[in-house]
Length: 499
Image 1 (cartoon, helix red, strand yellow):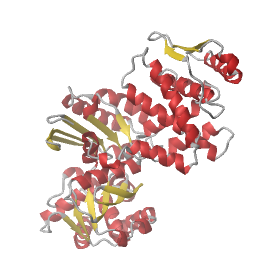
Image 2 (image 1 turned 180 degrees about the vertical axis):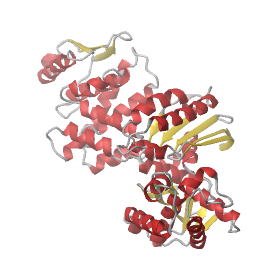
Image 3 (image 1 turned 120 degrees about the vertical axis):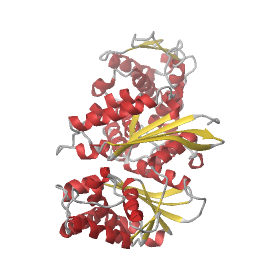
């Protein structure tokens, strides 16, 4: 990033939507503006896990205000992500279609572990350089992230479905506080977090840090009551519990430092925090100034370059875990990207490097399902990618890879709903052709072979083979003829000459 570059991060949390804007100054990000709105979208999920119309409208209105502030920003200057509420929402696509439009930038729904990575990255880059072993905790509205790391490098990362909004709705539904309700809520939180005991055992970290809303809300109250600033202690949590029980309800709670937007969900947040302290043997927790949006800024500025290309490493990790034939997958990736590179010479696509990179990743993973079963391995592979946590990838990016893997062989009818996406179709054609040309699991003869897209909107692709190629490779020619027929049943046409 050059000096003076503007950057912006948008965090669609379950409780609040946040926008952070700043500029790069001698390699460092300097905040110039910070906007936060309490949308509480996490409380707008109905019993069938659909966002209510009111919850969606509140989100759209907030994002429209953010979008006005982001007018004039370029695509590479803005990163927007959504977390647990939209991970859960069954109708998230309905919300996102309009949300992307009013914000003016694409919103990525990220996995729990990707959220954890970004949180640690944001926290670590705002702390002094140190080799200490860190435990970072973020209690959000509908999820809690726990991360172990050292210095700038995250290690163990996990996201648990327990949070301040979810626990307040479940255990303090009418805003009533009682000692019994807190006991039940803490036991329930421990039940969800129980598996964290071994992975985040006190012997594995030196200092515990708390990030984001719940930690900040509790910390503000404790400081206003005279407790030390910047640290949460077990004694402080006990004191706050007594104050809530004495008040008996959120409506009657009058306590210095308590923001109005936190009053209704402080019961759930405190019960989850107390469960974490008890389970992991925490006596005190340092308040961290960094968080998710700072992790997004770090990605935008390239501050995570020491981790290398996270997405490439995630692809390699998946390929290794499922025993992919990496020699063959690399061969298919090379051919597929060569074919797409040719097509991009006749087809103007936005961000061509992105299309090539993601096509290569899909090719490298196209046989990932073979480890489960050779029969319908493309379906197994698509399922794996749709349900895998991969650092650096949003859920939508993983779904796109899964569609390419699902469609790299077999009938095209299964992809009919997405064949309107031109960029995806061009990637798919190149992947299917590469798999055919590499069917003998050796480098194919591509001399004289060209692939070109028709005029914009024509939905035509032309593959030309040199004279006598079909005679030299009769099986490949047969498979290509079958492929030509397969595309005739779609809105697209594949013309193959020379065979």
